[in-house]
Image (cartoon, rainbow, N blue to C red; front, side, top):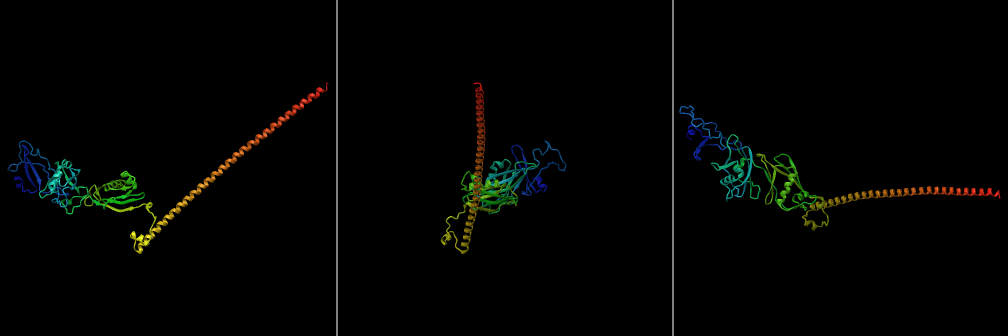
Length: 414
């Protein structure tokens, strides 16, 4: 401290600690640094000089023995942490870079006590195994949060990339009062309206577009098949917000959406980016359309009387005209569909009749051919039989003549 004062230096302070039998000098910068310009202190060399300014040797070797060439890197918030709107049970999610490695951890703001304050947040961080293995948290002179790397040297580094606040159910919280974390990059979020249970029929769809950090819009589709497959059911019924989250996660995956997580609150779903993009981090959900399939439309027992229309909120002339026009259009569409179906059915029936007639013709032709073949064979055999019979008769007559001739010759000698 005397040397520091003699040199007129105010950029750093020197203190000592005595663990055991050794004395350790601690050099601390006066500046706290920021996200874009972190404080750095390097101790490069120590030289001992005499009263005349000449360097002198020190018994026992180099004074730097036992010193590191730089202190551990620190990150200090730009202002004291404001805990207005943060409950003791709320959770604080940190995205850090310590010594060049990504570190993500979530701690309880109140550290299991009755209030959320800087001391409890620091204790909660230091009690977290993930955080404590690479860094330590401390309180600055005016209640700033100070993150110090667990290593020293030129590769030592500590940066808070993003901080998120959630209530005990996991719902993202937006603080009404700005805190010292306002200079830290924050993940973008968007929250939907209150959830109600819904049943998706065969041709029902829920479709919306989502854009993350302005890079490429994806179209996400939810239908009955996806609901049944995700929830292992057959009814298409989404009964709870937890099941709706499961269906949304599956739909986002199918659409190829990355960098987004969903959180199911007590009444609504919150979309959050999984990484930060500085002040430009965005997540936008647009063009939400819920469409019902045509098979759900019905014109059965439509009551178009004044009382019937009034019962469904149709009271003015323009409303009545619009409703009747819609009914007529629906009926005309149904008639057209039935007519087209009947025409297609008639065409199919005609083709079936043509095929039946063709088969009958083939059968008749085959039968006629078989008959002709049979008749031709009988005629040939009959002719052959007659020829053989004629030959037989001629033979008999020849033998008879021969016998008669012999008798006539013998009669001459009597």
